[in-house]
Each structure stands twice: as C-alpha cells, then as structure tokens.
Length: 482
Image (cartoon, rainbow, N blue to C red; front, side):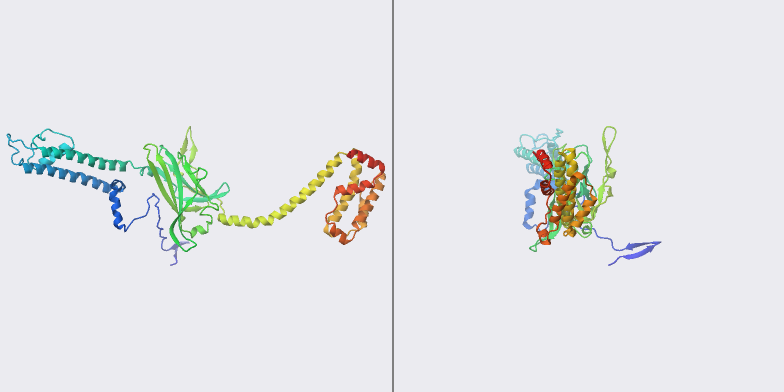
C-alpha cells in the first residue's frame, strides 16, 4: 500500500505504515533469539546436568529454588525429630524430671523444629540436647549433618557461581550502534568500534565476526541461516586486541570476502546480519568472558567514518565516550569491489599497448642518441665539427625515408637539403659523395622499399660515408678507432 502524502504548511510528509523491524538472530545486548522445543525424551538430559541447569536459570527461579529447598529440608528434618519423640512417648512425659527423653525439652512440633534449626545452624543454646539413651537420635543427627553439608555445598556453590559469572562483566564492554563502510588505505572496508569501560584489562582478548544470511546452493538446497566467517585479521594477528582504549575493527572487502558484491545500491535490498563476538579473560577473576552484538543491513552506513575519541591531556590520554557512536560522511565510491575490479580490467587493455609502443620507441631513440653522441664526444674538436655536418644529411635522409607518406621521395628533396645546410669548402666533395649514395638508395623501386622496411642505422651510413673519405681523413678516423 502506497504511502499517503499530507501537506503541513509548505512541506509534504509521507504518512504510511512504519517499517517493521526485522527479526534478529542476536539482539544488540548479545542475547540469542533461539528457543528449543519438542525435545521429547531429551528433556531428561537437563536433569543429568542439574548444576549447570540451575546456573543457567534466571535469578528469580534460582532464588525460588533456594528458598524452597531449605524450607522443605528443614520441615522434613523437624518432622523426623518430632516423629522420634512421638514414637518414644517423650511428648507426654517431657515435663517429668525423673524421665530421660531422647531429646530434652522437645514436647511438640515447634520445639522439634527449633531443635533442628539450632543443630543445623550450630547455634546451640543449651536448653535442648540429645541424650545418650537415644541411639536412633544419634543416627538421625549424623544423617542431618551429612545432608545439610550437601545441600549447602550445592545451593551456595550454585549461587556463588551465578553471582561471579562474567556475564555482568560483558555489560562494561561497548560496541558501536552502527557499522560503517568506507575506504581505508585505498581499500573498501567494513568497520565497527569496540571499547572497554573498566580500567581492568581483558587478557587475551579476541574478536570474531560471522555473516548470517540465507542462501540457496547450486544443488537447490535452501540454507535459512548460513554462517560465513568475516576475516578481521586472523592471518595477521589483528584479531588479538589490546583493549585499553576504543579500537576500530576493520574487515577488508576483497575477492575472498562474502561482501565482495556489496554496493551502496544493493545494500538497500539485501538482508543479512553481522554477529560480532568478543572473548577474553577477566583480569580480576580469571574467568572467560564473552560479549556479543549484531548489525543488520539497516545499521550499516555506507560512506561513513567514526569520529576520533582519543585526546592527549596533561600526562595521560583521555577517552571521550560521548563521541563513541558518532560518525561523519566521507567520499566513498558507491560501487562494489567486484564492479571496481571489472572496470579496471576493462580499461587497462586499452592503455597498455599504447604505453608499451611508446616505451619501445623511446628506448630505440635513446639508444641511438647515446651511441652517436658517445662516439662523437670522443673525437677532437675539428673532427667533431666535420662529423656533425656529415651526420646531418644522413639523418635527414633517414627521417624522409622512414615516414609512410614519403616512401617515393626524389633527389630534389635532397638537393633542397643541400641548399639549406651550410657547408665549408673543404667538405664539399664529401657531402656530394654522400648525396649521391643517398640518392641512389632513395630512388629504388617501391618493391625494394617494402623489403627494406627497417631503415639503415646511423652506424651503417657512417661506414658507407667513410669509404668516400679522403685517404688522410680515413687514416685519422682509423687511428681514433684503434
């Protein structure tokens, strides 16, 4: 049924049925909403472990059992003392000074009950006592002592264990009201906060997380409450906590996480519950304590982060618990980790070939430059000047021959290069010979150029040019190379 819009002033409000709170598997206080029924004959197992059954009962039932047990025991034992006095006839001759009864001064049930209480509580006022002429009273007295010790040990021990249970210690362990999803160190993480209100530490504190979600297997089996483990640092030891100040527990969402496909959009339609279990040893009692809580999908805030609660004061660190549950918004991509990885995989192949080709070209150019400049710097100044002029023409010719649009260039272009480049009188013959060699190489047919796709290197052209040097220059160059 769609919500009805009502107008109040200049604003519209949606009025409709409130969203019903979903049934939780574990309450925020840690209580599990599970009830066992239709046990049949298995109910007798509770009586076989009577002590644990009494400890697990609620306090009102424990107090009721405690009072009823002592009341019934006292009444039964008082009735047994009264029965001995009745059978011996002590009730009728209790005030006869010449008669020696089993229990002195027991002449009715109230007096027998008072005698039992004085004996059980070891009060011993001295007015009522057992005489040596009552063997049955002595046996009953021994039975009373043994039974009283057993009842005291059982009930008092049960009450002591229940009072010292670490469940109340868990009340001082806090969890944040909501969990948040945001980026930390460049990775999408699910985070929540835990804190310890007491100064006493939790020894060997360890935290675990379970994702409870219904799913269907490929075989068609439906699992209503399937439990998956959420890694909070089990492999790195981050799950072992030093809980002296509030800590933010982080679960990295990756390909191995059950939340791999969770996004901001899918969070609105998902139904799951995250159960958090914190275990540790109470420092004062040495008993193991466990605190639990849970977060449903409505309590997971996308794009939020917790406010800091620690501050440095004069000589100590101060924790402000008023900001323990507070969060603030941060920029967070609304996509799941799976969607982000798919986008990266689609965009990376388009960029990688261009970069690799660019790298190859840069490497080839850099190697040619290094070889040519390195050899050139070793020549004397006069030869460097000659070789620089000599190298300009082959390199310009190489640039013209390497381009796709100038495969069939003519010698007229080379003549233009000759007109533009300044030459000296002593080098005219060398440049003319170089122009003739390049003209013959560049006026080859198109079929020959297709076979020679890779242009000749600078070193090969230099060797051809050296063949046309005068004898004097060839001798100087050979001496330089040797």
